[in-house]
Picture 1 (cartoon, rainbow, N blue to C red):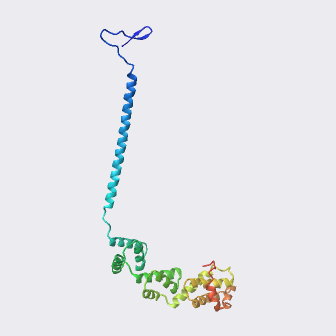
Picture 2 (picture 1 turned 30 degrees about the horizontal axis):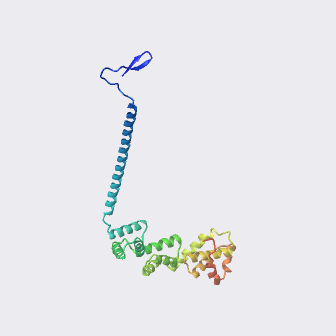
Picture 3 (picture 1 turned 90 degrees about the vertical axis):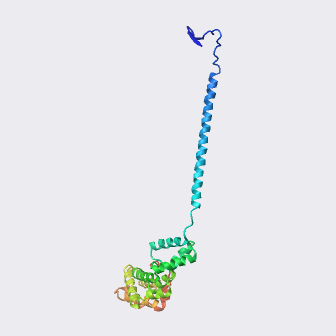
Length: 254
């Protein structure tokens, strides 16, 4: 016990039978108590963190187990979905869809069943596809019958269906289209040398599938209608040079 006096605080005299209080160990015990509480609190926090981590891993494992337990999709439905996705972009031939299904791992038997069904309901129609392709590519790109046949064959269209679609383009139609292509190209070649003009025009028609005879005739007629030196070249070009003219692949003008 402490009592005030003139010089500060002094220890009060002990009473009879009462021992003096010993505070020499009080600060040390206080530090130990605080340290013990801090450590126990930290251990508690780590335990909670480990518990949360265990619960998270358990939840993840549960979700993985649910996904693994999901039943496999019906192969037929998978094939139908793939076909509809392809047809939503543009019309497709049966052979094109079969190739996509095979690439996606669909069994050939399943693919055949789905494609047969789509044939029945009209979602696949190679005949209509061929006719639409011919009309679009001939009027839009000026392609001749031979080039159109090659494109349809690459897409798996039956040769009979290809022939039926090409009946829409007769010789007169093909010749008129060739002449229109030449006239349009001539308007952008006025400054080229006459021989180069003839060579490039014939090469352009050849690349679009026009027969050699039709190509050179269309170019000569178009050039003869002009009254400049370019038109005069049609009278001096040797038709026997046509294979060389068509085969010049270094020509930068297409």
